[in-house]
Image (cartoon, protein in one colour):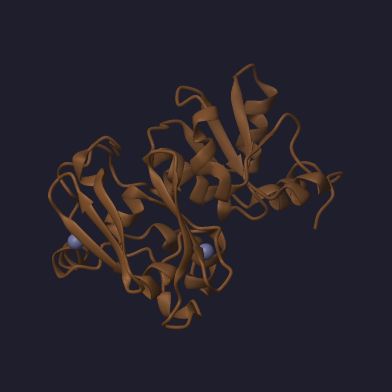
Amino acid sequence: MNLSAQQYQPKTLKRLGDTGFLVEWKDGHRSEYPFPYLRRMCPCAECSAIRHKGLDVHSLFAPDGEGDSSLIQVSDDVLPLDIQLVGRYAVQFRWSDGHSTGIYSFQTLKEMCPCPECAANIDENEVDPTMSRPEFQPDKHEISPRDLKDILDSDQQIVLLDVREPNEYEIAHLEGATLIPLNDLPQNANQLDPQTEIVTYCHHGMRSLQATAFLYQNGFDNVMSLAGGIDRWAVEIDPALARY
Ligand SMILES: [Zn+2]
Ligand SMILES: [Zn+2]
C-alpha cells in the first residue's frame, strides 16, 4: 500500500474536547472518531487478540478483520490523557483506563473511519482501486519451520525478526534474531531494509503474522511469518530450545 497516497495522509488532527478525535484527510475526507470507539478498536496485539477471541488467527486479516470490538471492556467515558504523534505516520493515545500500547497508523485510522460512507465501502468488500498493493493474504506469508531451517542452512541471506517481548527473547530465541517487539515495530520499521528477505516469528505465530502484515502494507515484499512460532520450531526442529 502506498503510504504517500493522499487518502492516508492527514491534513488536520484535532481533539474534539471530551467527545472524540477528528482527522481531516488530504483527499478531502473527514473522519470523526468517538473516543470509546477508538479505544475499542485499539490496534495493539493484545486488543486484537481479545477482539478475535476464539477465532482463527487468519480472521485478523479478513476484510472485516477488526473482530468483535464489544469484547474490549471500556467505559463510555474513556478519554485520552495524552495524544502523541509517532513519526510521520501514526498517533498514540494514552487512555484514561491505563492502556497506551496501541499505535494507530494513519492508514489504520482511515480504514476504521466510522462514517456511513466508509462503513458502506467495507460492507461492499470493495478493494479501493487507488490502493497500489494487493490485499495481504496470510496464507502466502507463512513459512513452515522445516522450510525456514532449509533457508538458514543455505547461503541465502535473511533477517530473522523476533517480535516478542524482551523477557520472552531471554528465555529462548533463534540465533542471530533481531528483537523488535510488535508494538514497537511502527516506530522501528525504518531499521529494516525493505529489500531484504525477512522472516518474523513470535511464540505461536499470531503476533508475527500481524508484524508481517504491517511490514507488507508498508512496502516490504519479501516478508514471511514462521507458522506456529518458536514453540513449533522447538518441537519440530530444535528440541534443545527452552519452551514456555
Ligand atoms: Zn490495545
Ligand atoms: Zn469515512
